[in-house]
Figure 1: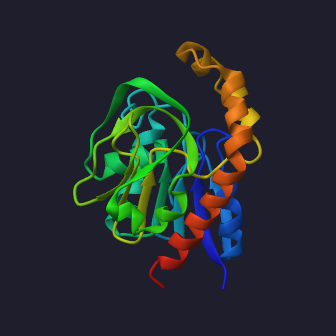
Figure 2: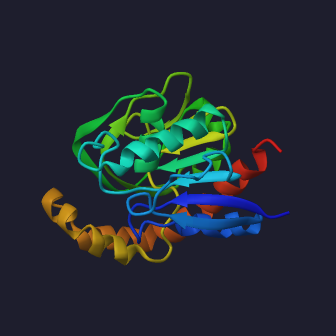
Length: 233
């Protein structure tokens, strides 16, 4: 039976990555929507079987600068209040955390590069176990506090809040576990200004993507398959 996945994409090249394959295999029909240019008015937040909120280079707290975030946050809040299946990546997880009452703020340092997550005991017992020991992509300067009632699943040395769950239907990642087996060069071009300002070695970042991308993609697909299978019927 076909199911629907609504995907909020804030910047064209930050798409589902390796998550697209397990979603299609599980029978999800994927629809991308860009909240910055497409109205959410008239769309039932709870209609889609799954909402995925992707990343982007702005802050979850910047609705005064980017007014579309007000409508997007209201949409996400309605979805989370109904405990409908929702997955957030980077900015997406920050928006979810903000809607749930957590604080989102600059860390004062950029975490950009490939490194493994350290899973909490709860993370080890969750679908995130597929990511154990696998270098994944990190690309953020903001971080969120743990939302009230949520379970912390993972951390890194730089950022203590890397993943959280709220029951079996709500999952947020500060990192980018979707893996980048292909298309990573678009990130290097699209975020060239940020990389230059942060003093990131682009050649080293590209080399790590080549080194770790395939493994991250395999682990990402397994993690998502496990999470989708555990969703309530």
